[in-house]
Image 1 (cartoon, rainbow, N blue to C red):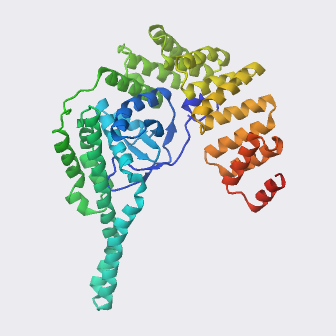
Image 2: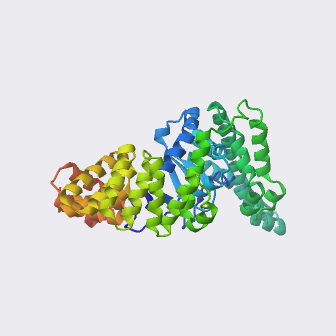
Image 3: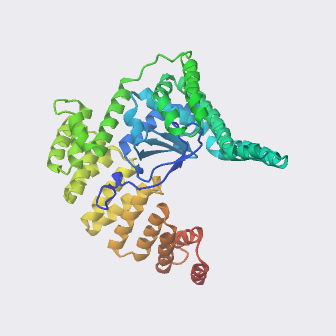
Length: 461
């Protein structure tokens, strides 16, 4: 999925992400599996943003300040931190209806509004205090000559610490539940979805996450949390509000899209040829593309385009298939059309730019550079755009700008050593005191240069 020839809107960056989990009460943060990776898709991101924006507004949060991040994962999770909300592909696929998906996101809005991501120190303190007190009692018992009691207290100290931290986490999760229900109500939505979704994991959660501590099995705090939420939402005026037909349709579409990309073989049986609905045909077109049958995929995309000629995501998909299967020049027209229909989508613009640069003529490369610069004004940290821009400048013979773009790419994927090296090389080829030269200097200075590197850049000014 991360092969260099693939369309940049699907390029995934393998990563280990740390966020708070809605389905893991008692923990302020958790680390995702190494196999999880980021996914960029304009259509899915747009739909998720439409679903969550009323909740941001209800909480008094500027929705434009929060980035929606999609993570390919087998776990149905969502989480939030400063400036970001994460939703996993499994969460979308396992949500029975839009209200459940909105409910989980409302919970995360509750975390954001409550500043919970800034309070990890409080959770640590909640666990550390009882642990220290228990160890202290053990030491006193030892001094008093009660050896067995001392050993028991000291040995159990970590468990009491974990219980204290989990208790703080449960309280925090419950507050996010209640805040989420409030925001759903203020937005004119039913709070039923969050309670329904959490109820699906009532027992699985307790046994899989808290097996080490028998107390949590005998006293299922997760059930208490769900029941408290259910009691609250059933009394709210909008409890019986139903999902809009548009929301239902959009959830079906993004589920079909994810199935087609992530589970293409399964999708072929799940979305039978007899199913003539748009989501089913969309999923089959994507599945054929993923199974390396471009002719069948393009035939089905063209049939969908005949019905929806102004759908930018269908044009995007057509261009993507053509580009990745060697029809580079043919990919330009559909990708250009996708940008015309959705001009404010940087990922679509980057796709077009990548094709223009791949065509390779000087006019096309220059146009590609212009498109990339437009995209970077909206997403200045888009590593894929910087990678393609480096290639474009290199074709142009602009060595300094090519190295600077490469430094930007490495900086944004977290490879500070390479970012620093390429930024130093860029400075040597750029006009001194130009904006690009100063930017290269900034990258060097913030990427922890060695003393020798500091002397090297100092000698250049």
